[in-house]
Length: 130
Image (cartoon, rainbow, N blue to C red; front, side, top):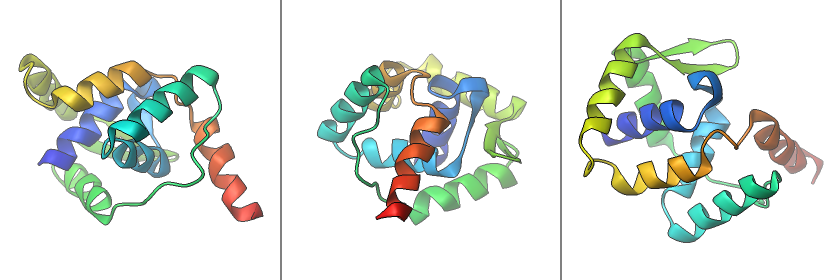
């Protein structure tokens, strides 16, 4: 449930059109695991260039996305995932409680919608070149 809530918050608070690719969701998930990573990502978004050399892919997040799809909270689209009406209701319930996901909410709000798919793709394409 925690990971599903995290995905919904990411789609709601830090995704343009409330949509995101899986690599971008994984980047947010990776960053939430460390205050230093979060600070770096906020700085990178401000400069509009990711300085993250690579980030981990968490199988638990991929499973949470699949469960969110099965529950009708997230839908798959041609570029990744988007929050559904049911997912909007769920995330609004989370946002009603200021103590729930406080650290994640603060981080996602600081990043806002500034982390673009293009930034993520540019960084990931650099992995293939090396």
